[in-house]
Image 1 (cartoon, each protein chain N blue to C red):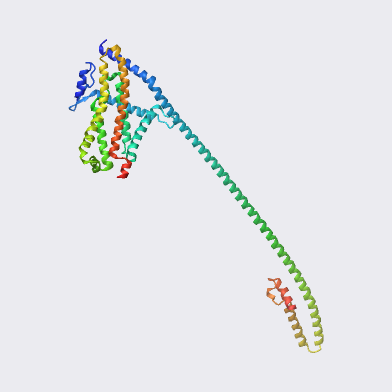
Image 2 (cartoon, rainbow over the protein chains, first blue to last red; image 1 turned 90 degrees about the vertical axis):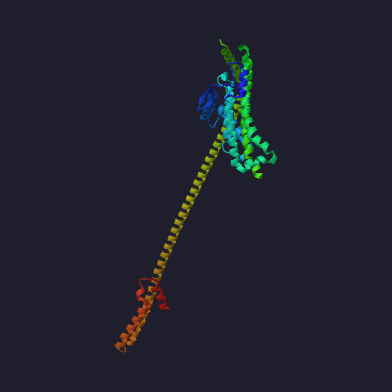
Length: 249
Length: 185
């Protein structure tokens, strides 16, 4: 399941460093990117482990630093959901947002390890970015239909002008899903390409630009996790509608 | 050393630099924020605990005050009850004494009245006996039958005067005296 972009990137990279190329295996007739699966599992295990470790140390008194981090994240997502949807927020949106952020962040941070050539961040593979996008887009549709009814949910496409419906449909069902998934994938994948290019430098000098770039990559990883989560909440808000909107209609 | 190993070595060194930079420049900021927040939470917990303690203290002092007030009320009520009991007892004794005194005086009066009555009756009987004696002497000159009738009549009169209600004599002590007075009048 290698794609064109990955293919062309591989041409640029050094022979031994090939972003976009994966170890693959066959399973039920599908080609599996084993490195992505392993990295995804590792990231998932880290997120779950941190969560469980944090939950075990939860106290009523002075919170641990890890608990503060989770509280800050949850608080931020809750704030976004409350601002966007108020009481109309579908159940589980906050959990989805927190999970997406934590998981994408850990995935992206795997890029900072020197093991990047062996085990690239799973978000640098569209095969992780697309399913996450599908999860969000389908969930948003379901939440919208549940909140406003199918007729109103799809009828919303013709508002305020019916002749703009095609562009609205393209936005909702094509541009948004594609941009949501490829933005994440592209940013992280580009980081991998940069590291591969830097690796073409002589070994005694490449550590400096590598360190500089990876520090920047960490920043990008945080930003991308943030954007993915924020957009998810915004899509939900748009589909479900705010309290004021529900009150005036 | 192969190129690949050199690259890996160099990148590992880069990773150490990254860790150093994060530790030196990023961690202090996050740590400061975390410490601040932890202190805030600790402060809030302390405040809330202090407030809970104060509340508990206030509640216990309120309860002790209530218990004290209840005890006071009970004591006052018991005292009042005892006072009332004592007063009632005193009044009853007083009343009993009064009744006893009145009864005694009444009995004394009764005895005195009876004595007087007896004396009067005796005096009167003495007079009447004199009259009888006169009549007998006068009428003895006529016949014995009338003499007997006179004596009987006199005895009847006397009887009626002294004992108008023979049956009630023992039950009502006043009756003979009253009856005697009436008979005398």
